[in-house]
Image (cartoon, rainbow, N blue to C red; front, side, top):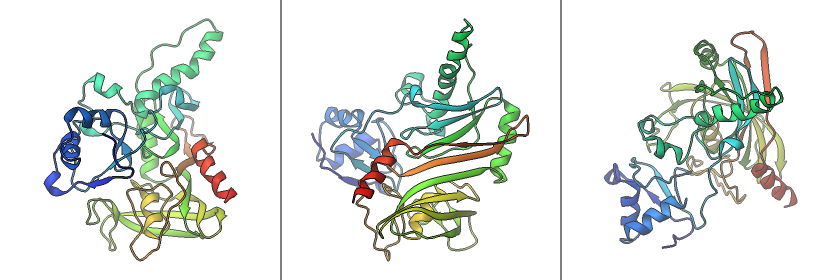
Length: 327
């Protein structure tokens, strides 16, 4: 069975707890289990903008299931993770789009074979470090020892690309985590947005459920304070703007929510739509959320040195920008 392009199904309270396979089988007119499972395994199904290959995944109320006409590209491998900096305390990597930073709580009990189908960034990083160090060890006639797991101190979304730092020791994890909690780190993102965006600061209180099962601003004092400073980098008429976003705070999905709520959603956004009173049309054909963690800075947990790193825009964002410039 070939799904209709762009076919979207919303998970209701009555569907909560169903497996993805059972949910799709009911929506597709009683298609066989084999056909539905093949569709899922072959990367034709997205949940909330993320590819899902697990037919047994239990659905939650409010989730959006989208069927793709063409199979999504294969997930990144450890070789796709670029090590920007590494020492005995920390490692900074350039994360490709298409992988989560860490595994969700309910996934940690999965058997090893199931987890290996699609690794997370923290699971890939030790191998990426080993590959990075192998050149040095090879020159000395040695082999790198097996490296222990890294420790996540912050996260970026599956579709977001760019810089992430991991701790390699318990003390480094504690010190770096405190810097992120205190918002003393430097974090600059680049985002391609719909519409003409000017200089400004977006401030609101973010809550887990704004009333439709998604995160959003509360409109009152409830929630966690979130502040995003925005400035245009390049404008494409009145249709699109490449903006830089500097985080004063670092809440989950903060940039995506803030830009959508002011009527300028990031191109490729499928979860957070702009309020109805905004006329928003995204014809960019962006293959994913066009958001990139371009700069990251923090104080080294052992030496106390101020470290700052930069990451160039990846090829998929450059391709969309090139197309907009030609238009």
